[in-house]
Length: 205
Image 1 (tube, rainbow, N blue to C red):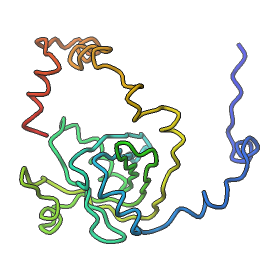
Image 2 (image 1 turned 30 degrees about the vertical axis):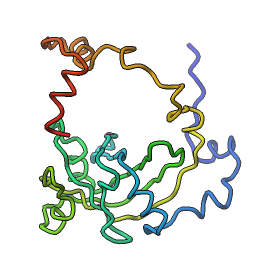
Image 3 (image 1 turned 45 degrees about the vertical axis):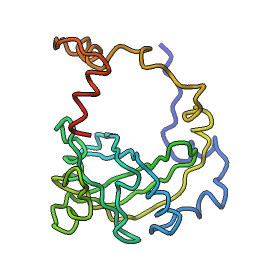
């Protein structure tokens, strides 16, 4: 059997690509400037990437009202906990490595904001208070020390047409989440419509 060709050195990798443009390198900054702060204030959704000590990776979505991730200062972000499935994958990874990557999205905007840094799980009174809403106070807050921040270009979103209404996929194109998980696990639960699921989730939103 012929094995596929692989690239396993940085030198071999770079041979296939031109050097990055000067702007692509220099756009990375080590603090949150006015544009980063404005972007985060408008963002209702962030993807959280983390790793355990054995380099097993995880990416998890987080959502809330625009600006639910708080900018404490130019080097500090506060990301509140919200009710979830209690697997705690991201939190366990943060305990293990103290590292985090964030990708902020704004509906209708093709550019994204990437933020990387160090993270800890905080129950400090001031951090909890900063992230408390009329609905709830978080059990904990992910306190992030920003090490790198930069705006990511729009190409991926333009290619995917993610915000284009014409590209929207009807929910009925897939079985319900319960049906799919049931097929994957063999765990049988009572059938539930999408509407019933939304009502069940409502208290935790």
